[in-house]
Length: 190
DNA sequence: CATGGGATTGACT
DNA sequence: GTCAATCCCATGC
Image (cartoon, rainbow, N blue to C red):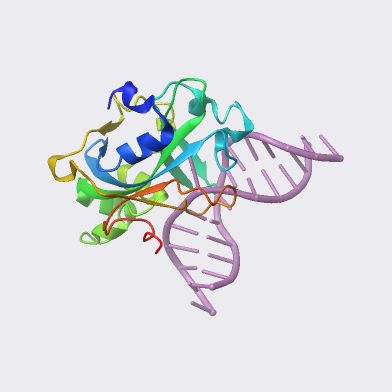
């Protein structure tokens, strides 16, 4: 997607990314779950201001922000809004598309367990082989690439929900899910 | 310079 | 349902 796609309010981008495709090498998947983060609310890393850690978040839109969660997992975000604003969309789950065998191998799962491959923000980075070195990369040029919706996902029904696993600003309904998808990290709340 | 929490996952009870 | 693993980095003394 072009940088202009990301130079919009982060909530619009979070919804607009549902149905788009994430590519890395020979593996890819369709985005079925996202969350929005913005420097105006305390759950966002950028809330504390510009630091070495949040440099990418405040940088130009359309870049990858990859950071380490719980010292264990790499999480993939797409930087949004104009440069100088700390906002990003967390990619939380994918529907596996290409390179499924390779993804299963990386995840240590039997081929055929499609739902276990990318149903979580840490799982999908492991399945696609995305790591901290991908931080700051251009999402239009790679190595990690996000491209537009395939025909089958051209007009997705999107459900809003509360964000998962955070303690601050937990009341904001800034989670976006593809309705009925079996590949979500957590089912949509009732 | 020491401390503690975090946008998670998987193994175990 | 509970809990440890593991590490970056913001905060506070």
